[in-house]
Length: 324
Image (cartoon, rainbow, N blue to C red; front, side, top):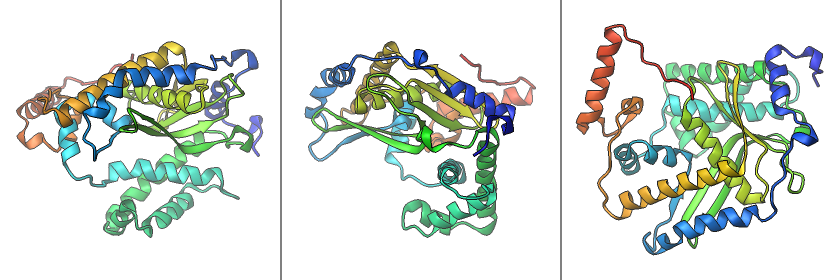
């Protein structure tokens, strides 16, 4: 196992952020789990009578982000058939390869880890495996290169994950409310540590590439809420780690954060129910995601937004997303 003196500055920074003294670990009321679940039930229990008897509303971070953004895009994606693509698959496969690296014996070569991951998934009967089998050699090579790049970035920037840290990749959480008619679910990329009674100790990390987005923070707050309801003690910290920048955006977990997340989840679920079961007309919110919207061909607002962006780029005006 690597010692601190053998770690590079980026790896040492990870250690510094993830570490905490006993005094820095907050404790929470043992009744918090019941309180949070009750708040959700009070706000949403009546929807058990609205959601059709043969249906269950599944809610994840993707659905929350979509409906809180452009409702028209949310409906379009809901009504369309899901299709795997290289941008969608590379994140999933990179997480699987990183998970493999945690338990890998011997030299952790990113290319070998990626090859082993793709080979394992490719011969699976699941949709992702069948999609991999359909790729051309050129597309498969492109995908493998992008996945390997993410695995390389993780191994370069993160210290070896020790067993005593209890690392868990894509750790699932699930909460059922409204008599089981609404299911809140999620899988965080990486969970480290554990709670000790009512004292928080776990850290939840999402691995990303690209620019900061407020949605990334909302995703982690949602995971923290699920974790708090699942075991009763919230995580100590949530953080997005941008692999291509070797940069954390951490946030301590607080009672105020959990209650604000409940408000967001309740708002989003009300919108979902109105759109799906009560024929509520969707609002449109043009933005960068218009590029990937299945309804773009029939959306005048989205087309106008992208055309305006193209004009700004051609005129040399930079379009950036600022940090909070």
